[in-house]
Length: 501
Image (cartoon, rainbow, N blue to C red):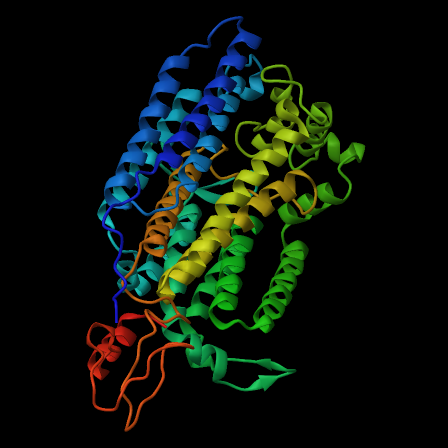
């Protein structure tokens, strides 16, 4: 039998380098057009922002060539494109004289982007094998719970716009839930890969649904209870939806039981109704969602519909191809640089630009799910699938809120909204996805499931047998076919043990 050998030479990642040049050119072009539209010249800091983004992008490219040469070559350029386009948008709002844009800060945005990319490079450099995270299963659960509860600590958390999801340490603020989603994804992947058979098969049936035993659900129920505590204590429907969606989605990935989706949607719908009946903050958001053009809601100082209506007007003004960089009026929308950056992009880039941005996100999610299928270990499959799913869910929640598909939430658009917590957390997600993609694409000496390494004759019993397809020469009993012999029992056992089924 001829053993399958991995390639000796790693790919040069030329496609990734070319795509990075294109992504940086689009972002730098946006900043260039913003400057000439608003200041009739290059904006202040143009070369600094451009050179920093280029240096960081190609540093990440070099790190991948050295430590993860087989990693996906599309994910990094796609994320750099989103990050550089958001840099152009934040710079455009920073140059606006509007009082409402006082919070827009292009230097701070490039600083957090740089820290996020450097952090991703460190993770790729330090974590050589994603399976090492499986040892941190219960540690990740504890870390996730602590992060979620931190905003409820007196003196540390602070309520903003009706939701208490921030903590303040001196001049710095942090949204712990952004990092908690990563910790919970690691916990769910580690726990479910060890207990998926029990969760899928053990237990009683109820209304045609296979329910797991209570003792098998213990740790997961703790996390579910924490997500409800987030909703009750922090009054944040968006974060609760994100955690609960991750919880149900990864259960479905692990068990392949549609019943979990039904149960999950039912439980969340019941929780949302209870939250609507208890919290005035949630009631106000539902009222704004249902009737934003109501004059009473539009003129309301706090919890009104002014923000979402102005965002809708902005996207309508952008039309199909947009007003152009620096030519719209996104500065009329409160928090246009963070919560409503999507409507700002829609006004200046139009529906075509918004669809292009959504397609870039979908490419990232699709690549994550594709590598979840391709990676050979169960933990990697669940972790990659969970991270890709939670990014898709966050994208739906944010865009759905701005376009009035669902009520508004406090979540931000990954890589595009100004804010340190979101940028750091989502760059960590990208680092883990790249590490898993390297394992999924790396050549292996082991045969892929469902295939044979090299059909060869084998010796079984007495007489001549024919193995290896039509036309193969018969092999006599007790003879050895030299280099073309089949694997010995010991060799076969080693091959089976080497493949994670």
